[in-house]
Length: 420
Image (cartoon, rainbow, N blue to C red; front, top):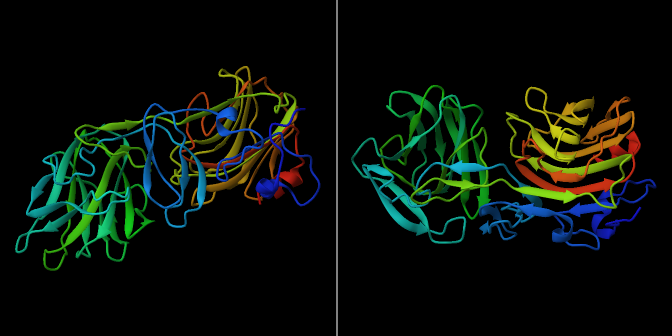
């Protein structure tokens, strides 16, 4: 068995504390280590659009078409790994140009390009209420689909206001679909209404934060986004805003800039045609990563060994209510095994996962807990490794920090240790 990549000091965290044969494939996206090969030699990557990510300095950057995104924590600069996301569309127009006529103003003044935005350009606007008036806001009307989950997100930098209101009404303005009152100075949520889950505020550095709020459109086919910059007491105040995003889905994805039309970010696709590293009889994959879908509305697929048809060995995080790591094995469309861990994925979406297979011997382990096993089933013939997705989609919507493949069925004790 030819080794595509051997363990080195760079990949020492993947080595158990007791003897074990080395892996045949190491894809350490966070460290940029791929053994004797390069990323391009081992992975075929595509995405039919540009897409954003944070560099090591915490600046929001745009990756070109078909260029992989290696993301970072914008606060610490820590490498997070390869981004794998589904396709999303930002429906808000002029997401950064709040002075544009697409945003209707009522008793507010918008100062364009007032401060440096998360992308390093002086492009963030100051939205300030007009003294002595009431009902100050900017607003935009958007067509949506009924019965669909949506997420509204925006970047904010404190001004003088300690009470900014994001309010999402139906197109007629008669019903609140979702609302968040937040304090930009303290970067805290004061209250929320009609949301699918509690709104989140994430620090991204330099005094900037990103607010996200998910809601359901119910029977509505249009909505109006209202942003009120005013203090509740004296109807005055200001806030810096940038990067407003409305997208279908129960959680916020990476930022998609828009101007005069909605913009779609294409899905990330990362595949490998299986080579000499793969053993058709038995194998184990260990993956470290995270998913942004902490609500668990859908499947978060971590990897798929497949033939592009009904034969597959897939590892995924199941949707609510369980959120277990599940191994789905099918041979020619016939399900062979589906063990699922007793423990769910962590509430922040991070995971250390292992999936192992051999004839009549399948196992999955998550975050150091005892593996779940099944002792019946055949191993299908597969030809491709898909990272963070599979033939049926269900993207991870997060990061793959690393994937290590062993051409053997590792013992349960090793699976538990490798994921601890």
